[in-house]
Length: 464
Ligand code: NAD
Image (cartoon, rainbow, N blue to C red; front, side):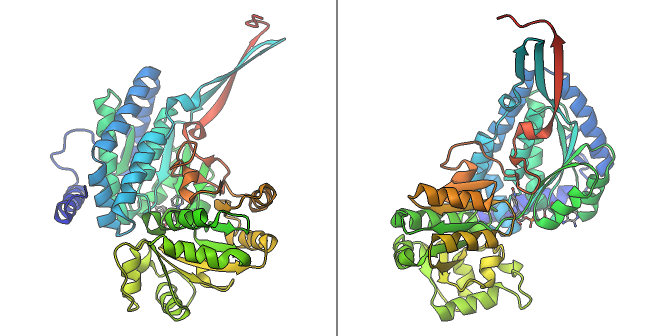
């Protein structure tokens, strides 16, 4: 059940007041430090202690993080929506469950062994040491939970620098994770942050000589910044995922999947369908079936024009005021009132419409008709803009699916399901809220946050 708004607002206020008060009177060690340097020193000390502990203890720490986060999931989810004004409570709850339960732990760094004529080779996934992680406003809880589990499972410590506009919520989840670690016998400071994360402290994290690896989850500019840092960097950047529907698709199912995938969390997941590309022959049925879900409102051309003027600025940028808002809020501001049951508004768009090309992150979805699947594939590749992020296809034609997957080269390619199946929600595989397309690690997990070490034993231990 969603906590009452006044309770949530009071929680955020309390966290922010504690932050500005500098944590006076606080019990020693809650993961928060006055300066980046203090957080780094605590992290280095904690990482040394962690690698001195048994793997069983490390598993206990991970289990404790999972349990403690789930225990306060509703509070965290409500805080995220209240503070950032982005997304939907029930979807934030799903996001946190997904991150707490489907992020791989220590099993992900199982070593590999090879025995042959010359003996034995052992490959182990060793910690990188101290990681600096910059987290986005869109997932102020999920990314922290997901990164903490993966990075600690691999034997690392992490200094977070959350998005300043989500610092109350991100600080709260960091405190929950920190307490879970300490309660399970783990070291103080294994996850840490400066008390007041901002762009200046982000810069200090990026440049700190004792931080071995950087992980940036956000837009293209911050990914480029960490890539220029001279450190090992993992960049999880923006996407603009196209969904392509061909004439062989099961159209009613495609319509339901797109309605659900594009509207989850009001479109703020980087994986959400951001434009529909549909083969002309089935376009009318797709739109009709989307309307029949009872959750999708079809904008008339005049209404679509008004909405576009509202959410796209004259210089062709997204108007940030409408990112992550409920569809009712957006439509209300152009004089359209719709019922609470709606989750998404769609409209027919020309190929050069700005919302086809911009990452809108709101429940307004353009639908573009194409002549055939070949034209659809070519167009989808263009609108994905080499983000290497996510693409979705609805088709029952194996060659069409293969051709699209080969052409688009995205990190995630979902066939015949909603986009979120690609991050493990109703689809196979682990979850990640740091999907590293630009740097190629894919859906990050513990193994991503390691360096490989080889041990060779010559002429022995081949026992067959
Ligand atoms: P953002 O790039 O504005 O911020 C991300 C992080 O980088 C924040 O912590 C921010 O404080 C920091 N940052 C941004 N500019 C900086 C600068 N110049 N110097 C230092 N630090 C800086 O992104 P956002 O608005 O928080 O998040 C939304 C974006 O993130 C979308 O584009 C979305 O697609 C993307 N995203 C990607 C993934 C993924 O896994 N690939 C996951 C979630 C979100």
